[in-house]
Length: 296
Image (cartoon, rainbow, N blue to C red):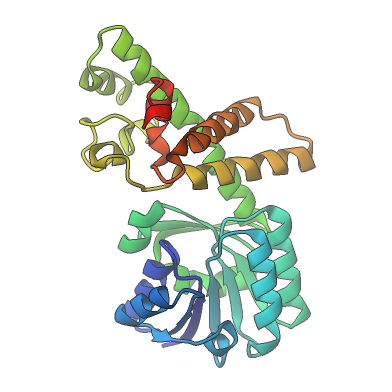
């Protein structure tokens, strides 16, 4: 089996690294937080004391980091120390320009690279059922696919460098906007005397159907696995949804695209976060729409 390095062991990266290790790969894992390194070791990885140490001898390097500036900095640090012929994969969600800059760093050092952001949340990371949206050359994607399939159930090649990030940003703009529309419908239904179950039974089998409704219903009851049945614990935190909506706004400005619903969604999630709910699941926006979020 291949030797892998995994850098960034947070809520998503930790389980992803563990799944690579469970598949039989030797995974050298690094994070700035010692507790996260220890958790990765407990899950079958090998602890590394630095990013450079993690990549030594690795056939594939995976990063899962908070923002574009971190990806650019880490790739610039480690690329000179990655062995020739190795593959670089970034699964962070970042702006398209940062993704392309990371590809350029890899190319400067003769390394193949893929931007491969994910959809599926913490639950998908733990279960190994993530969707990977990939950008990069055909050969790099072909090399990345066997590794990504150990961490997810769907791997899609979206195009050249940065295309994975473009797909992720567009997907999550859809998600943010449809969650708000779904939550608004339940708030209106409450005012009109509809039960949550009645509205769900109609909309889930009619033209109002969406993933936000049938898989992640924002009110308790109809979908037992949704965060609404667990006090709106994430899941996918409102702070991360706001981050992605802001990335969509930046991308739209750079590309000259008009996205009024995406802009409205970003504004509402900014208000929800500012009310102290950045750590709540993003579906908790239903409480804000009821006027409850500011008071907890």
